[in-house]
Amino acid sequence: MRNLGLRSPYDKVGGLLYFGRMLDKIRSHARGELPPVYQENLGKGLDEKCATFLRAKYSLIVEYVNEGLTDGAILQSCFAMGHRPSEDEIYMWNEFMRKRGWNDEVSDALERQKKEQGMISRSEIKTLFQFIDADEGRSVNVTIQTAARGKNPSRTAFRVDSKDPMDCLAITR
Amino acid sequence: MATVALHSPSEKVGGLFYFGRMLDKIRLHAKGELPPDYHHNLGKGFDKKCVTFLRVDYEQLIERVKQGGADEEILQWCFKVGRQPSEDDIYVWNEFMRKRGWNDEVSETLQHRKKEAGMSDRSDIETAFQFIDADERR
Image (cartoon, rainbow over all chains, first blue to last red; front, side, top):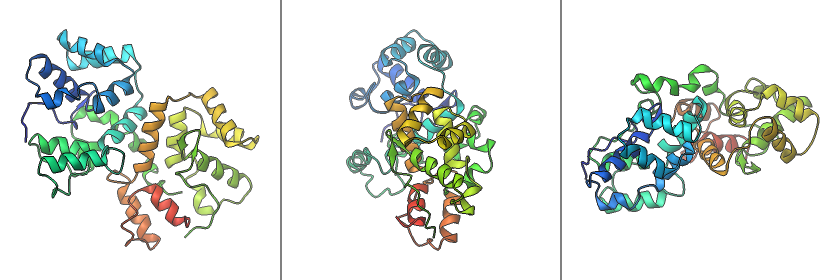
């Protein structure tokens, strides 16, 4: 279990899951504090998914971080460099990221990591986000609403489904 | 349990989940062959998600489908009047749709639908796609 002072992947910046954590890792690395096992994946995996979603170059995001910009300023720079995603796109992206590791091509890697960290019996850990939180000593988020509709006001823009009450009822046909 | 002849939501057109099924529903509705319990959600739910993803208007899409043409042709029309998503966009879309209903805000509705359909004991059905397939006997 690691306590590295990195944000949870569930923490949002501008409505986006994971983005703040990606920046934290870059900052930690710049200070020489990021453990080697984390360094291997810098710019890969979920970092790469995040940069790709924003259509921003990871190397430029690193530059922005190293220039000392705030999270918000970096995100705005990413929007300017790539594109500004709509609320719908952010919603889909967040759900995609939140469920990553469940029943997909990284599920095997997740199980291996759980095994390596002695968490094989932790059946509540079904996603990468949950594993990251557990691995870094945070409680595992097993509720839906916390991830999708949190109390943080910055998350309100994320509630696309709430525009259409029928949306939730319209899943099957 | 429904017997309507629609494509599985997992069948792809141009790499996209669900798009072909949405077109099937429009076609069957136009022919008067779509069962009434499917009418209410036309253009909503997954249909709405799909047209939003492609940035096309559902009513315009209906008109285009009525003009005829293969699924692929209609998808190309969507790319032209809406947008052409990248491979990465399509990947996210497919994963988002494939997992819809698992551990999210529609999970409760899914459980409700399973109960209505007498599938409460079907623990293998964890997503909306899986339910649709089971409900339509696939």
